View 1 (spheres, one colour):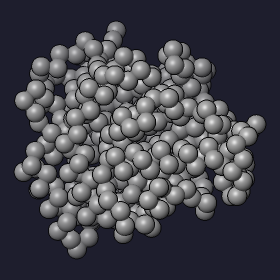
View 2: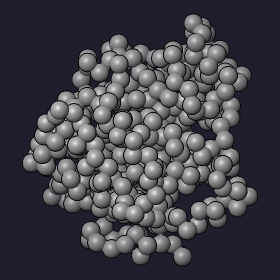
View 3: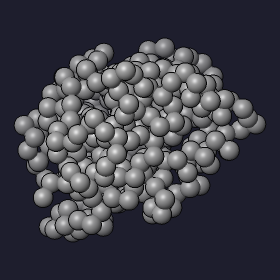
View 4: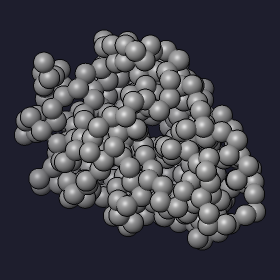
Length: 358
């Protein structure tokens, strides 16, 4: 893992910070270069993956699944730190989903300007929790021309309750619950008490979760006022029409024991999409990629090489845990796929295993 010194800047002057895995020397050389030549690099990575963390998190959340992969020059993973989440410039600027989406767009333009990727590069977008909302907003603003595929992790397309929707957030779903959450974030003296409660809500009981210290440090570095402002925007956004219009392939990952949403609310994303696989991670909660980092890293590495037609072109990275010749066989007891379009969304109850494809 490298923390870059040469950071891009958003159009409002906000410095965009990020972590990187893979991409080889070409990335480091071009990032530090002052060149802005339009000629593409012959050593640009084939796959560029943008990893977007969730609310009150940080790019460090991805280090655990990234550590399960053997990195190479072929694939570059970038995890920006969303503003409000411990950035050096958090004292300035507004905090809402559209602003975060514009930051992602500005990051991509910097990558192209620096010749880190080609001018016509398409990106794999990975959004965990609120990060999925940032991706949906990005597409609404800038279209799908720069998208290769999507991975959406444990996020419903709408958090608030509506007359036609009851599969959103279990903890922030209306004005009263929003104010309660904001009060918990803002009451001080720091975010320690909130971070402890958040972990209990985001991890499945009995799950294999071993990164409490790193996760809590991310939350403690966040700006409380920014979290309150972001959640007020995020929880009220209805992405159902947008999600239903997406054309590019998607992997939708659901925590079987998620407490943040009814599992059907997350699976509904796969139901809406035209070209999606819906994967359920057994005995996992909202932070499934932290609870089963090896499985998530392997699944992601396999999926990001998927073409627009939905055909897999093989894993982009070798997995340290899994024998690639056996593929998913190594993890067969830790996940299953469901046909999201066959789920009865009229009812909140029921186990995702009931809908497992035989």
